[in-house]
Structures are given as structure tokens and as C-alpha cells.
Image (cartoon, rainbow, N blue to C red; front, side, top):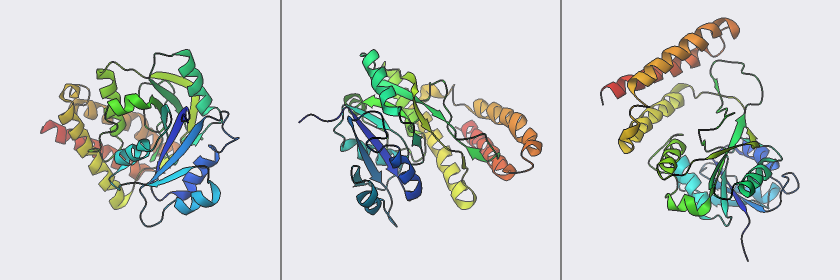
Length: 279
């Protein structure tokens, strides 16, 4: 028996409320196509989504993940896939009803293309400076919360590099695909909503920021040709530009909301730039 056209892979970690909202939009009869399966790969240890899926979403497949970060989590789900195509999203995303049919139409119209990138939009206007969302209206990013790749190509590329501990594994995969001659085609009709969320704060925020700095340096070690694009000057210029265009005016626009988080973001970007200077 042949497998489905698409396998949707959703990594999750202790966010059952958000995961449930995502799965509600992937339920049979909600999505506008039928030929797909959904795999939830769960890095949770204190509580897991297994019981919730069995009770509310029995059509989805649950699997335990190895607990080594998001790259390993996504690879874990991909290993169980039966679909011709892997479609990745995150547990805090809300797919449109026509998400999968958007990719299906693009695949039919572009039979030589093996990677497709969908549109990512936010749920509302930004309300605070420390809110973030990976909005993608034009393509070129291949962010892991909305793209489709032929399963055999994903396997040829070795999947996501599990050395990355933050959201750099999709940047790395995108770069490796381009070097191998595969460029993603942007599909604006394949949409998911990524609601605004607050940046990590306190000890968790500093830990995530430190991991991002380490992953950026690791990326440059793996891809030294990218030093011109991810240089100390790049981060210094970008940080100063964002500070002047967003943070300072935001003091008045947002009446102080999120200023501490925004200052934290700029401070970490500057710290990364100085680390790059020492490389």
C-alpha cells in the first residue's frame, strides 16, 4: 500500500494547549485535502502530548523524541514518515485550511522543484517591543515552521544538523540545499499563522540567547564562506539600525512595554558581534 502524498511533522515540548490549536486546523475535514498524515514528535518529559492525542486527535501519530533539541526532534518525526513529501510546522502555528492544497498545487505546477516555502503571517499588529514572530511574506528564509521538501531529498541531505540547539538548523539546511543546487520556491497560498510571542526572559532568556550565539559561531565554523554574511559588522550594523528604528521610537509608541526585552535583545546581539570579532 502506497503512503500519503504529505507527512506533516510537528515537534512539540510541553505546549499541549498550543499543539491542540494547531492540530484542530489539521483535522480531517478541516484541511482542504485528504492525502496526508500528521506525526507529532514529543520532546516532553514532565508531561507529554500522548494522552491528549489519544483522546482528542486519534488520527495523528505520536512518537517520543530523543530530547536533544529541535533539530533532533524534527529528524525523529521525519524517520517515521510515509509521505512522498515532508511538511514541517511548529506546535505554536495555526495552519490555514488551504495550507496543504497550496503546496499540492505548487508541486503539480512545478514538477522539477523539490523544496517549497510557505507564507508565515502574524495574528495581529505588534503590541510590545519584546514580541517576536517569524513573518515571511516574500520567501528566501526556509524557516522550519512552514516548508515542504521531498522526503528523498531530505534524506539525501542528511536531515537537520543535530549539532544546532536553537533555530539555526533551518538556516543551515537552507544553505546546504542552495550549495547542492536546490532553491526553494515560495508558495504564498500555503499559509500558516505564527502568533506573536514574548522573547524568553530571565534565566531561560539568557540561556537561549547564549545557545543562539554558540550556534551562530558553530554555523560559521561549518560554513566559513558565510562569514561575509554573518560577520561582526553585520550584527553591529543590524543591531544599531534596529535600535534606532524600533526601540527608541517604541518608547513612545508602546509606552514602555517590552523595552527591557528589546534592550536585552540588542545587548545579546552586541555580545555576539564582539564574540565574532575575536574569531
